[in-house]
Image 1: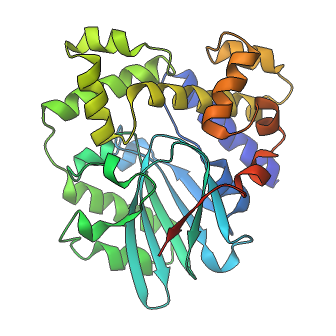
Image 2 (image 1 turned 135 degrees about the vertical axis):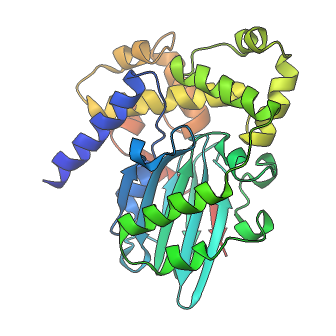
Length: 295
């Protein structure tokens, strides 16, 4: 039954890509985190283009001390409860496989923002906190009491309800720079990462160098990296949804020149070949990578 449910979730994620949209995936969370729950943001949440999904981990049931993460271009708000202490972290997307490690967590609840979408709630630079989880209080002085409510609420759906209210209470007006980033991200999703940065420069009327600067600030990486990450995520999902597909066909569907090209890009962003990723040996490899500690 569990395999069937996971299969449905994977197909749902693939369906989002096939609609020329982007839905990031962290398979290491689902595979290694204790009593994992996740839900893709729905239309009734009113978070379209801002939040990708929500997740919850029972820290007391975690089977392993570390949670493997892969590049997805996203920034997460992570609410962590440890005894009487509750903290909220802003965690930027990694650029290569890493491990997340939490200190004696009782529960972990996350809100995964779409690439660049944290600009809707604060204007701090994401590029400055890549690999450096930072407490939300460094970005926002007033969390309006939502932090404690979210952490202490035992029901997952109620946590989501409160998190949506929290994000809505913080929404800011977009400025010109944020609209440019939003437009570029949308074009990347529509093309599954196949659009050239040069073309984005032509469409927006800004130089590639200027787009690089905006993306480093609002996404935490360059437009080229984000395009590659989107392609890697799509190819990864295709492999897991349709395990019988030849890797050469997966490469073709995801826009790579050939299987060898896909392996080179996977090696850069996942530190593993496509074959290693498909048979799940990647998680053993990631466990030996660097660890980001949420202290």
